Length: 315
Image (cartoon, rainbow, N blue to C red; front, side, top):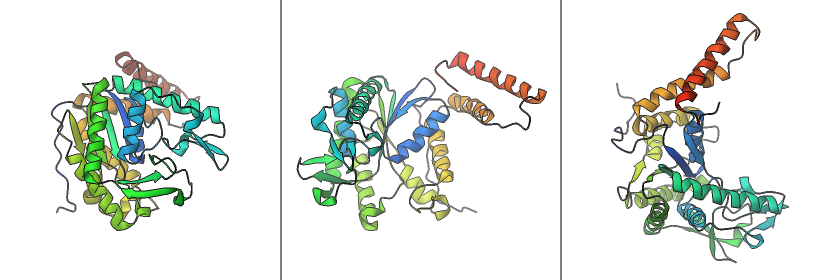
């Protein structure tokens, strides 16, 4: 009996991810979910230097600034509700200290530039087609930082505007790293504050825009959104807000991603890493017992064996 409609996915024949790969993830909060998985399994990865970025224009802006080695100055930031913010970054980077924010921004831009030059894979997760343009500067912002909405004009990016932005992103990446693989995905998180119909329109624009650029210059698509909407079409796979995927859904989509994009050899290494990770969280009844001391010795030997092959791993 078939109890779900499963999206057919085949193992990526080339450009797969292994432990030699260097990955940079940029985009919506789902980038955090996948990024945390990659971190857990000790891949060489980094995600969202400027925090969550939800639409393609914000991601294009980050990559442009990184390649141009932009230096943020006082005029690029502003104070609101006793904190300093940047319209280019998520509120996670905001600070009570103006100089601290400038340091955070400039470090993030420098970090992004270095990662762009060295990345084997960039995973870009788009969350929404809706954008806000600040009226006074006529600039599309990455985050409104709870400033009153009357200060912004809200609009939805057209399919062509999205594809043009994605083309620009790919061209920018290739200008500093011609070998990088760009993998797009659409976040399964629904932006229902925009409205139910508006969210559907937004996701449709993203999918259509991506499909105009994939298969060009080493760019691909992974159907995170479609897996959530079709394979996991049940509210038991959602968090309490009934919007975000819960842990079970995240693990499921991660497994589908892993089965498609990660090499068989790396998958075996992931199993070894997970044994160590679970061992590190083990809480004994008696930490001084011979049994536990032997357990720790065996665990240390497993770590040393892995580190001989993958010295960049840190537990």
